[in-house]
Structures are given as structure tokens and as C-alpha cells.
Image 1 (tube, rainbow, N blue to C red):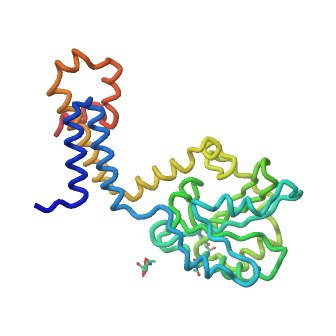
Image 2: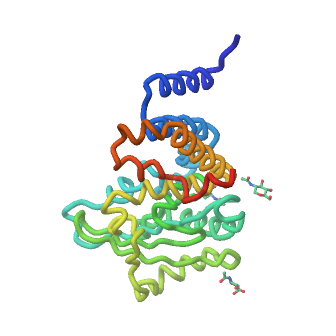
Image 3: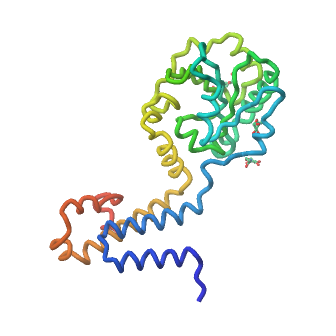
Length: 275
Ligand SMILES: *[C@@H]1O[C@H](CO)[C@@H](O)[C@H](O)[C@H]1NC(C)=O
Ligand SMILES: *[C@@H]1O[C@H](CO)[C@@H](O)[C@H](O)[C@H]1NC(C)=O
Ligand SMILES: *[C@@H]1O[C@H](CO)[C@@H](O)[C@H](O)[C@H]1NC(C)=O
């Protein structure tokens, strides 16, 4: 008989779970982990490096920085030192392709790229960065960023708050002139500073380390079809219900009372009754 790797894993997980006579919660956890691993192999990468584009991003003297989940903070923070007196300006173009911007970002993105090329020889121009929400869905989620938009950041010396102003871009009328006019007039400076929970540097979520995990959660909800969740919930609740009904005596005799409510995790009240 030929076993594929996952089926061996499944067998060993299931047999070890039943052999060890673990609590229903433990069994459910093992099974949930198994299904999570199985599902993870189907879902796309949350953090594509897009290297060829990054190489192409070097336009003349000044680089258009392509942000990724792993290096965005380092990229932006590395422009300042503790001695930095005036904040360094960063313009981050939040864009996307067919899945995050429904294909409507091309005009604004092209205008931004042309602006970057234009400014590449101007040492006074802002630092420019590019964030593609198709390639970086988790990063976009962790910022609560929606394309097409321009995030203008005043990055001061480390330890001080970063002022961020967000300008939504019109997906049909944005041109190079939009960006050069904005730069000349500096009229974003009169806009209120962004103070949301999702502020990438100073928000409650970033400070507590929750922004990236939340970004992953939103991303999983977005990419995993809802029928898979239904399947998972139905599977879990069946498992829990069947081990509850099959072993009521064991539960009454030994199980600590605190375990009972915990076992309901994932199963809405009454959920399993209908199957
Ligand atoms: C804009 O530049 C980025 C980074 O180089 C690149 O990945 C992207 O394809 C460019 N977009 C357009 C529309 O030219
Ligand atoms: C985006 O969608 C358009 C129209 O459906 C298609 O022509 C294009 O190839 C798609 N682009 C990508 C990168 O998938
Ligand atoms: C973009 O600009 C056009 C022309 O000014 C306008 O008709 C359209 O409503 C704008 N779109 C958005 C999303 O503001």
C-alpha cells in the first residue's frame, strides 16, 4: 500500500491521539492542528518578496523602496538616527493588483512610479516606498491600509511618534501632476494626523504586537473560502459532541469542571444539533 506523506501524518496524529486517551479538547486540538496544516498548504503566501520588481525599482540615484512584511520598519526607520533633528518624509504608495484593488490601481500606480523616476535625481524629494497589497496582504491588513492611497509619514528620531496622514487617491484621475502639486503645496500638512488603532508605528495594535497577528487573521478569512470554515466548524463540533456523548461517565468521574466550557470553543451554542 502506498501512503502519501500527509496521510501518514494524519494516521499517526489520529492514532497517537486516541492511544493516549487524551481529553476531548486535546484531541480536538490535535485534529485542528492537522487540518490547519493541511489547509495552509493550499493557501497562497502572505509575504511574497517580489524580487525582480525590487531590482527594477532602482530608478537612477534614488531607490523606490519596495516594502515587505519583514523589512518595512527597518527600511523606514533606517532613514533616521537619534541625531535626526527634523523628521524625514516618507511617501508610501499603497497599491494592489487584481485581488486587492480589483485592477483599478494601475493608473495611480503608474503615475506614482513615473513620479519616482522624476524625483530619483532630486535629493530634496521625499523618500518613496511602494506597498503592493496583492503581494503583501498581511502587511496591508496590519496597517488597515486600502489601495490606492498615499501614506505620508514624518519619521522623527527613534522614540518619538510618527505623524501619518493618509490621502486617498482617485483611481481614474491621479497623474504625476497630482503628486508634484501635492509636494509643492504641502497641503496634506493641514489634514488631521492619523490616530487609529492600526497606526503602523504608534497604534495600540502595533505597540501591543497584535497588528501582525491580526493581519494574518484577516488575511486567512479573506483567502480561505467560507465553506472551508463551515467544514472546519462542523468537523470540530461533531468531534466535541461525539466525545461528549460517548463518554459522559468518564467526564463526570474525572474531568475537572473547568474543562467543560473550554471544550465549546469554536462551536456556537446548539451548532451540532442540526447535523
Ligand atoms: C511600479 O513600480 C513597482 C516597483 O518597482 C513595480 O513593482 C510595479 O510593477 C510598477 N507598476 C507599474 C504600473 O509600472
Ligand atoms: C487582472 O485581470 C485582468 C482582467 O481580468 C487580466 O487581463 C490581467 O491579466 C490580470 N492580471 C493579473 C496580474 O492577474
Ligand atoms: C475621481 O475623479 C472623477 C473626476 O473628477 C470623479 O468623477 C470620481 O467620482 C472620482 N472618484 C472618486 C472615487 O473620488
